[in-house]
Amino acid sequence: MGKKIACLITDLFEDVEYLEPSRAFTEAGHEVVTIEKEQGKAVTGKQEKAEVKIDESIDNVKPEDFDALFIPGGFSPDQLREDERFVEFAKAFMDEKKPVFAICHGPQLLLTAKTLEGRGATGYKSIRVDMEYAGAKYMDKEVVVCCNQLVTSREPKDIPAFNREALKILQ
Image (cartoon, rainbow, N blue to C red; front, side):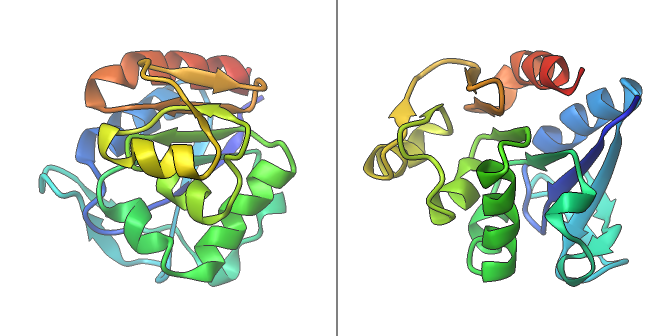
Protein backbone atom coordinates (compact mmCIF):
# COMPACT_ATOMS: atom_id res chain seq x y z
CA MET A 1 0.00 0.00 0.00
CA GLY A 2 1.36 3.39 -1.00
CA LYS A 3 2.48 5.91 1.58
CA LYS A 4 1.57 9.59 1.76
CA ILE A 5 4.76 11.70 1.79
CA ALA A 6 4.82 15.35 2.85
CA CYS A 7 7.34 17.42 0.88
CA LEU A 8 8.35 20.76 2.39
CA ILE A 9 9.46 22.95 -0.50
CA THR A 10 9.68 26.57 -1.63
CA ASP A 11 11.45 28.60 -4.31
CA LEU A 12 15.10 27.90 -5.09
CA PHE A 13 14.94 24.19 -4.25
CA GLU A 14 17.57 22.09 -6.04
CA ASP A 15 15.64 20.91 -9.11
CA VAL A 16 16.92 17.32 -9.41
CA GLU A 17 16.80 16.80 -5.65
CA TYR A 18 13.04 17.23 -5.84
CA LEU A 19 12.33 15.80 -9.30
CA GLU A 20 14.23 12.50 -9.12
CA PRO A 21 13.17 11.35 -5.61
CA SER A 22 9.61 12.54 -6.21
CA ARG A 23 9.48 10.54 -9.45
CA ALA A 24 10.94 7.45 -7.71
CA PHE A 25 8.39 7.70 -4.87
CA THR A 26 5.48 8.14 -7.29
CA GLU A 27 6.61 5.30 -9.55
CA ALA A 28 6.75 3.05 -6.48
CA GLY A 29 3.09 3.84 -5.75
CA HIS A 30 3.50 6.55 -3.12
CA GLU A 31 1.86 9.99 -3.10
CA VAL A 32 4.02 13.12 -2.74
CA VAL A 33 2.17 16.17 -1.39
CA THR A 34 4.00 19.48 -1.76
CA ILE A 35 3.61 21.92 1.14
CA GLU A 36 4.52 25.61 1.30
CA LYS A 37 3.00 28.76 2.79
CA GLU A 38 0.50 29.16 -0.04
CA GLN A 39 -1.60 26.42 -1.64
CA GLY A 40 -1.75 26.60 -5.45
CA LYS A 41 1.38 28.72 -5.73
CA ALA A 42 4.06 27.68 -8.25
CA VAL A 43 7.60 27.46 -6.88
CA THR A 44 10.68 27.38 -9.10
CA GLY A 45 13.91 25.46 -8.70
CA LYS A 46 17.19 27.33 -8.50
CA GLN A 47 18.29 25.84 -11.85
CA GLU A 48 14.93 26.96 -13.32
CA LYS A 49 14.41 23.47 -14.77
CA ALA A 50 11.46 22.68 -12.53
CA GLU A 51 8.31 24.46 -11.50
CA VAL A 52 6.22 22.77 -8.83
CA LYS A 53 2.62 23.56 -7.99
CA ILE A 54 2.02 23.57 -4.25
CA ASP A 55 -0.65 21.09 -3.18
CA GLU A 56 -1.24 22.31 0.38
CA SER A 57 -0.63 25.27 2.67
CA ILE A 58 1.30 24.51 5.87
CA ASP A 59 -1.75 25.87 7.73
CA ASN A 60 -3.99 23.14 6.26
CA VAL A 61 -1.90 20.05 7.08
CA LYS A 62 -0.91 18.06 10.15
CA PRO A 63 2.04 15.67 10.49
CA GLU A 64 -0.33 12.88 11.51
CA ASP A 65 -1.89 13.04 8.01
CA PHE A 66 1.36 11.73 6.49
CA ASP A 67 3.51 8.61 6.64
CA ALA A 68 6.86 10.25 5.79
CA LEU A 69 8.61 13.58 5.22
CA PHE A 70 10.79 14.55 2.25
CA ILE A 71 13.00 17.67 2.28
CA PRO A 72 14.83 18.47 -0.97
CA GLY A 73 17.92 20.67 -0.83
CA GLY A 74 18.90 23.94 -2.47
CA PHE A 75 18.05 27.21 -0.74
CA SER A 76 14.50 26.03 0.05
CA PRO A 77 15.20 24.46 3.50
CA ASP A 78 17.08 27.55 4.68
CA GLN A 79 14.11 29.75 3.77
CA LEU A 80 11.55 27.38 5.30
CA ARG A 81 13.38 27.15 8.63
CA GLU A 82 12.75 30.86 9.19
CA ASP A 83 9.08 29.93 9.72
CA GLU A 84 8.33 28.07 12.95
CA ARG A 85 5.39 26.24 11.34
CA PHE A 86 7.74 24.30 9.06
CA VAL A 87 10.23 23.68 11.88
CA GLU A 88 7.52 22.22 14.12
CA PHE A 89 6.12 20.16 11.25
CA ALA A 90 9.55 18.59 10.59
CA LYS A 91 10.21 18.11 14.32
CA ALA A 92 6.99 16.12 14.70
CA PHE A 93 8.18 13.52 12.17
CA MET A 94 11.51 13.11 13.96
CA ASP A 95 9.86 12.96 17.39
CA GLU A 96 7.31 10.38 16.21
CA LYS A 97 10.08 8.34 14.51
CA LYS A 98 8.34 8.57 11.14
CA PRO A 99 10.54 8.28 8.02
CA VAL A 100 12.38 11.49 7.11
CA PHE A 101 14.32 11.89 3.85
CA ALA A 102 16.59 14.97 3.60
CA ILE A 103 19.16 15.63 0.90
CA CYS A 104 21.90 18.24 0.52
CA HIS A 105 20.75 21.31 2.51
CA GLY A 106 17.55 19.52 3.60
CA PRO A 107 18.98 18.75 7.06
CA GLN A 108 19.00 22.52 7.81
CA LEU A 109 15.32 22.25 8.70
CA LEU A 110 16.13 19.36 11.07
CA LEU A 111 18.99 21.38 12.61
CA THR A 112 16.64 24.23 13.42
CA ALA A 113 14.18 21.70 14.86
CA LYS A 114 17.03 20.48 17.12
CA THR A 115 16.45 16.86 16.12
CA LEU A 116 19.87 15.67 14.95
CA GLU A 117 21.72 15.34 18.25
CA GLY A 118 23.28 11.90 18.47
CA ARG A 119 21.96 10.91 15.04
CA GLY A 120 24.09 9.63 12.18
CA ALA A 121 23.56 11.92 9.20
CA THR A 122 25.13 13.61 6.22
CA GLY A 123 24.44 16.72 4.15
CA TYR A 124 26.08 19.15 1.80
CA LYS A 125 29.67 19.93 2.81
CA SER A 126 28.89 23.57 3.64
CA ILE A 127 26.52 22.52 6.47
CA ARG A 128 28.84 19.87 7.93
CA VAL A 129 30.07 22.10 10.78
CA ASP A 130 26.51 23.20 11.57
CA MET A 131 25.48 19.55 11.77
CA GLU A 132 28.42 18.73 14.04
CA TYR A 133 27.63 21.70 16.33
CA ALA A 134 24.06 20.39 16.51
CA GLY A 135 25.42 17.08 17.80
CA ALA A 136 24.91 15.01 14.65
CA LYS A 137 27.42 12.25 13.92
CA TYR A 138 28.35 13.60 10.48
CA MET A 139 29.46 11.00 7.93
CA ASP A 140 30.86 11.96 4.53
CA LYS A 141 29.02 9.20 2.66
CA GLU A 142 26.60 9.16 -0.28
CA VAL A 143 23.78 8.02 1.99
CA VAL A 144 23.39 7.60 5.74
CA VAL A 145 20.47 5.70 7.25
CA CYS A 146 19.94 6.25 10.99
CA CYS A 147 17.62 4.11 13.13
CA ASN A 148 15.77 2.84 10.04
CA GLN A 149 14.04 6.25 10.02
CA LEU A 150 16.29 9.08 8.83
CA VAL A 151 17.82 8.98 5.33
CA THR A 152 20.27 11.75 4.40
CA SER A 153 22.51 12.36 1.39
CA ARG A 154 25.03 15.03 0.38
CA GLU A 155 24.34 16.17 -3.18
CA PRO A 156 22.73 15.39 -6.55
CA LYS A 157 25.19 12.63 -7.48
CA ASP A 158 24.01 10.73 -4.37
CA ILE A 159 20.36 10.64 -5.50
CA PRO A 160 20.37 6.97 -6.65
CA ALA A 161 21.56 5.80 -3.20
CA PHE A 162 19.18 8.26 -1.48
CA ASN A 163 16.21 6.95 -3.48
CA ARG A 164 17.19 3.31 -2.92
CA GLU A 165 17.37 3.68 0.88
CA ALA A 166 14.26 5.87 1.15
CA LEU A 167 12.24 3.37 -0.87
CA LYS A 168 13.45 0.51 1.37
CA ILE A 169 12.12 2.34 4.43
CA LEU A 170 8.80 3.04 2.71
CA GLN A 171 8.21 -0.69 2.04
